Length: 188
Image (cartoon, rainbow, N blue to C red; front, top):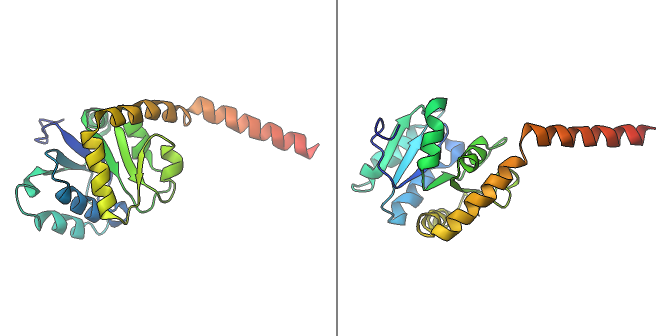
């Protein structure tokens, strides 16, 4: 998958549809300000109102613009390889119903930067670097920390493996059973 999309490690990864609520304009601005040698891989198909995102990339000067890779749609067979090869997954979305990319990254052993908004703090648990998605400087500093601090990154990876277990089908079934038992006891 890396060769197919001209991705050269190290790289930072965003994996989802390209659309405004995903906060990609700020992510791109933060990346441009970061000075990191990493490529920024934006993996996902263009979605609703993606033109401002694509314009933000085309307005950048090289060498920064040359380090941003747009892959388009990534199929399920390539997703795990892309996630596990990344230095970090960046997901500073403004709004999410759940936030599957956070858990997918954690399951693949990759550190995550995500937003302090919506469902993302609950999904990420104590296993991600949380930033204010409206604060481009905070996003820049977060990606720099994840790119440069190996010990911190590994700590998040270990926490991520534990966090993912909270969302297993087995754990969900146990919690559902406990809730049903409580409801049954209260109705008697």
